[in-house]
Amino acid sequence: MSVRDHMSCEEFHDMVDGYALAVLDPGELLACAQHLSLPGPHDRCLDTVNEIRDLTAELVDLLPPMAPRPAVWDGIIARMSADAERLRLERVQHQRPEATSHQGQA
Ligand SMILES: [Zn+2]
Image (cartoon, protein in one colour):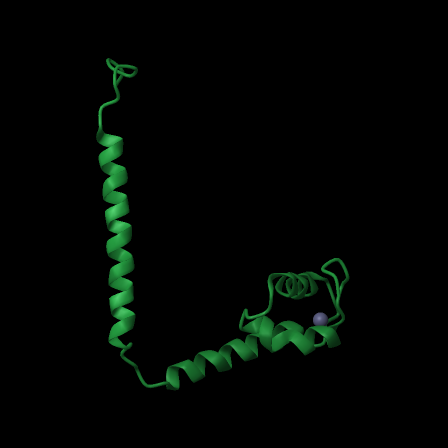
């Protein structure tokens, strides 16, 4: 199905799980969003999306808190350190006075 076609409510319900959880590909997400934007009548399309999202939120609340593996934290810290170093270098380069072109301008 191309993005330009308007899907039916039945087709929407075939994809509603993936749409509610935002795991469809971008074209499918767009087609579903376009379906919901149509005036209808709909076969409980938006209600179904909201029910799936509510149920998912309840399930997530039931999960016990988990500590990430140490390797996850190490990766986050390494990434942040690399970003911080890149930003520091960019700031140093910006603060260097340029040769003569902008002197005297505030
Ligand atoms: Zn519909």
